[in-house]
Image (cartoon, one colour):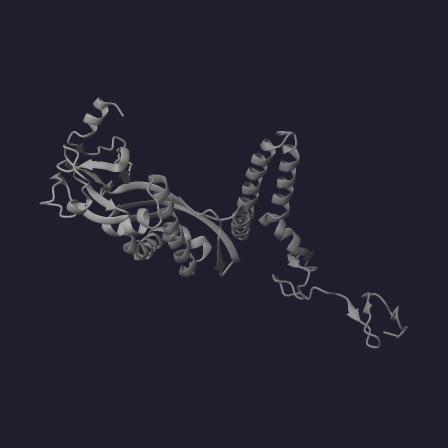
Length: 342
């Protein structure tokens, strides 16, 4: 090291950290040999705190403000001072700036499906995603549990760890809710608040508070979504076959347009739709149900009717053989089955 570099390294420090991105949670102050001069000024800005560590052990936490490092206001410096150099003695310690403001709009999502017991579908898999916000409430606990014990200093690592806590809490909350899969969408707010309370029970020991946990979407597998579509179609058919046929025709139009043949097979789809519409129209159902005319008043009656609904005439003019029970023609004099004289 040259004389100029040596002299510049011994000048009293002004230590501060400004985060231009606004996204850094923990910043470690870097200096060759981790030397900070006694008498240095440490500027801690609003929404920050500074943590001094010696040998991995937390020695002091500085709140927002300007602090001059002396043995008068920080007694631990007397045990950290090195042998005098003719200038200010260096303090060999780790200095961290921790941001205390709220971090918004962090994203979370389930990596694997959540398996639920459902009243209608028995077992169903769902996926969920959303956002959360958090801030550090206890820097000492946060240091001990997160970047002290777990060694997570990078913002990405810290957020990823907190994300895993949110996913775990939401998974447990949804699984315990016993809400039907098709009703989950109407309960996002309740599930979000329950998940936030659950994750904060764990986060409290970390010195972190989740101020917001939001479920933005819970999606069902494609197979279940198709089944719901089919069930809604069946329900539509039970109310109005004409409406159902129109619905099916519209789907056929969409599907045909997406196929390689384009709209070539669309004529067949319309033909089938028209056939179904004719087969299940109210007029056709009436014609299929009315098959027999009254021999007296010519009114239409169901084929199973024994008497005319209009005039009360007996619909069947045939009789049965008194011997064998075979059906007889009105003009027959002998039974064609047993020969009994009528």
